[in-house]
Length: 388
Image 1 (spheres, rainbow, N blue to C red):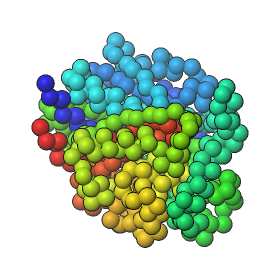
Image 2: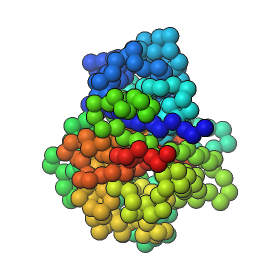
Image 3: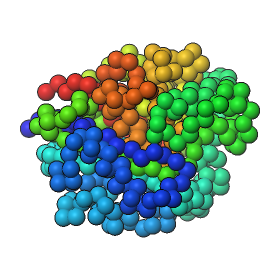
């Protein structure tokens, strides 16, 4: 039996900010869910199941929050499932929800991911000693900075590339009303003059800590036919993982990332991602990961990713716009960051991305990674239904 086509018919986000003091965790997630349902012109009673995801519980100190969020999400008496794959969880959560529709287990599924970082300390949470593991000591930045330096040595990339990415994404964020950072006076010189945190990563080349939630409504062929707006169709989706540390691991271009992208392209019939994909929402928490992931995902040959960035290919008006929404560099509620990438890709092919819409976008890639670059999740969505 063939899989049921899966459509994204509703997308909702909160305005991402440093601290949402006005709402509880339940209020935060309900806000995003309500907006997704409104976009789809559906109500809570139209939802058959709920799939939610977030980053580790110790980020907020609330254990298994899904148990008390069921009421806020209209899930009382309905199946509710939680997903967790570190920073990639938002993407993984969407994929689990899509699989329930594709397998015809449920017809319409609400999926949501969230984080309230203001009630946590992620730097502390990411510095806990783990037995038999390399200590992070200085959070995610301290862990990933050596891999960025390795990329620079391997490719000969000039030290200015990271600031070009940050300058681009922060300018894109000004066109996105939901983005956390709206730095209206941003200049390339300001990025380059910001303090060095973890050589070669500067302060303005890092992501913020955000409170926020993102939700989507996924449905089947019949549900899509009733949608008031053009849906985004899931053409391919995959998850891959590998250990955090093992002999021979390539931190610059992890094998799991390559395998995940290859599987998605195979499902979607993509043979030349650079030419066939119109927009990319890529998980870039530190600016140097744009050129690194361009290579990992097959958009550029090894050692060539930074040249796409430097030449303007990844600008909003370039041949391959990357992070038109402003990306993780401008908005980072960790548990939701991956789902925002997936949702923004869906908005692009629906033609509903507002001021940061990529003209003529018909196919878009959503990408997320997490942990020590060991969890990957991706999907490719299109404006047309996938071939039957």
